[in-house]
Length: 127
Image (cartoon, rainbow, N blue to C red; front, top):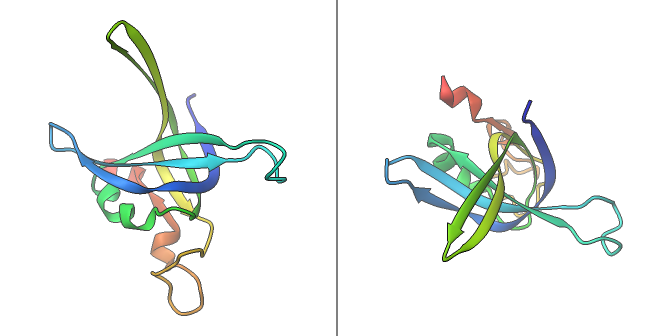
């Protein structure tokens, strides 16, 4: 079973892209810490991608500094360019849960994101 669960802070705002087949995706990067003491160990940076209509809807909420939890599958791509091999690892996201209220422009006055934005399940779109 290929299942990846990560939580951390978004490092850069999500960017929307459209593939040559017309499929939409948004990509970003997550800083994941292995411990709770920030200065003792450097974070691991994990790229992630969200596909489909959900990508378009959620991309404006994935902004730098937000704390999120993502669940999905690990994808490893191998690319050869000019006799050099590059290995790209990323998470293909199924669900996103917003953990923080930081930078929350979409709140309802009490500092909390609307319920429909707390957890977005991208699996529902596939059916």
